[in-house]
Length: 525
Image 1: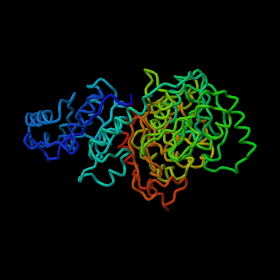
Image 2 (image 1 turned 30 degrees about the vertical axis):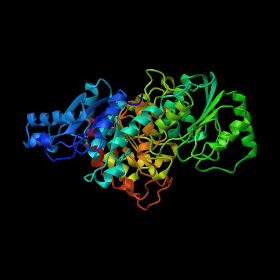
Image 3 (image 1 turned 90 degrees about the vertical axis):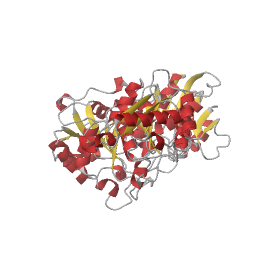
């Protein structure tokens, strides 16, 4: 199950927003609220209200009046399992006033679950921010008071409360197999041919297939091989580039395709599950798999597949990539075993010891680069971030690949330790695992952080949707201009002069984000 509980903002989400309301007679549920909440209750989900009520601090109403309002809400909408209230004003500096994550953590504890198994529904950016900062899912239901930039930054937007509930339940159901495979699966061939980050986010789905198969063979491309080596559940890896997937493909080589087809046939797979990103096609490989003699093939395809697929799965736009892949695994009859959370994970035996010369754990990792330059943090911005973090008392390690040494040296000169080119992906995973937080764009190390449960300050360029590619189920704060002109272009190189989506990030925002994530200079998270 993806979720145990649904947390709901009060004003503007459950009931009409009456500023500083202490009068039960003014409580008016939003349209469809009671039926939507009853659907959640019927599905076995626990419900809690998480609400900022600064009117208490300002003396606009009393605690007794507030409790009377809540009693009226329950009279109209049914009982909630918990009420979590922040009574403070912004100036109080508490850790419970949204967008701080305190209410989400408190609600999860009271409901007997974890924040990552909660989804929070609210009407403004503070609600979504609190959810993300706790590692929960956040759904924005805009109202006339919701600012356009809040809508742009939200990863999951619903038209109203009933629509939000319908999608929560749909996503919950989508990862549960309707039926098991029609025959035992001795060998499953799974496919994820793309970059390291793409392979990492497919990990939960691959573990689900591995739970129902005796042997799992993974086909990946050269850019994803290092990540494939880190995934639990994989018994064998076939590395081969696919020219319809690679971003800089060479000409199609018929002999290479014949060789790949023969190699896939030699696997002897009972079933193939072809994982792709939302903009990629599984059909060229499905044809090769048919030619290789594989009888059962599952993939996501909006295009008509003819006889190429036995299971043609479809997924709405906006679903996080790990869940998108999990839903395909479920359509093929596979699910994660009990006790295996739907989170990113790495094989412990594949991650080496962190280099001893890096000192004690407790640093902040800044990874400024990316294979796609459109998603990299501008070096001048990264340099200022290192300076601000160092001034705030943080020890900063600057990481990057062998081709990024010049950038990491420039950035680290502001006060960090330069690790550019010093590690492979597994070594980087070891460094990330001992960090208190990672400051990174939309690139592989963000997913390494998610796999280690390390909080992320996400410098997210909006070339692809944050809701699909943001750090998954880990405390996260998103920075950058989500409405920049590059939005949804999928551009690998920045299409807008000046890189405006990230050029405007204020280093003090990064320091503040770490503070919100309970990561302070010189302390422990």
